Length: 157
Image (tube, rainbow, N blue to C red; front, top):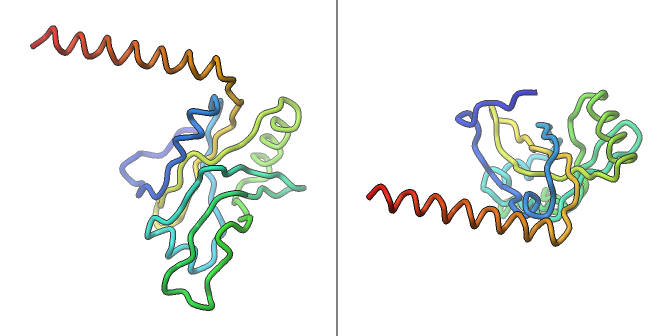
């Protein structure tokens, strides 16, 4: 599935920790069902995806562990900041991803939240956990690439 153009997205939140802790195998865009004050709070950028995950129950997918702060002008209409929120996915996507997570020991984590055509979308990633040696190896490789790029830049000056 091709990802939409980056220009039509208004980024709200990003989960950089997920890309560090997990190896992302596949990504998917999903809608999310929100109440009115949650949308207003998300537009203000009060969304935290760190620690979030997707739980599959029956033929539904739930986004858990994601914090959308209460809207400051919402008074009694505010929502629970960490309530599980239903994801809007096709049934075949839910069955495919829930099967992968059940069999292969994978997990689904939120990678980014953004507005697209006025609707809040969540970019989900099918992820496999990284071990500490893998993280160290990744950091070494990134550092080496950064130093090589720096050396090339300084040689051209």
